[in-house]
Length: 134
Picture 1 (cartoon, helix red, strand yellow):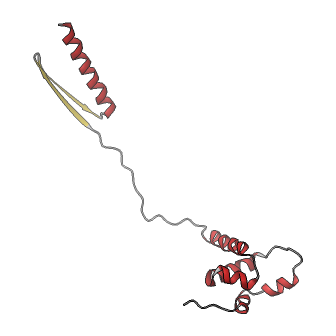
Picture 2 (cartoon, one colour):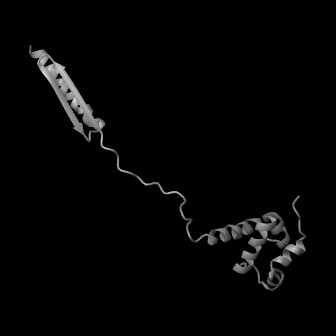
Picture 3 (spheres, helix red, strand yellow):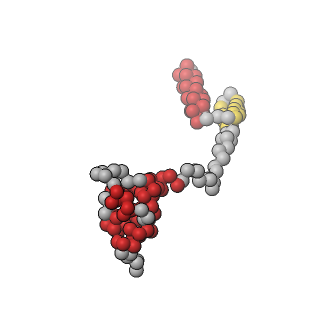
């Protein structure tokens, strides 16, 4: 069960809140030190109870909490894992063709799929062309 502090206890945690409130004129902005203190209390006791105790708009208190979090982390975290990209391995392809007139062996290194497709088209076109001529 969570302990619910009284409004007086929460106001007392934010030193200078009541004197500032009595001395302020109109809609003076809340000093940064008071906003940071209110954000610290809100992180410990919750935003809603703190905003009620300090008679502060919920949205304004949320802004103080967010800005306090944003300023804390100035140094980026050290990476725990770094992936090193290695160059792709060189692929090798061997094509052996055998026909009436003999055998042919093609050995190719560093071939891509597009290269293999183009070579296959050339071989097929040559065999079609020769078979039509006869």
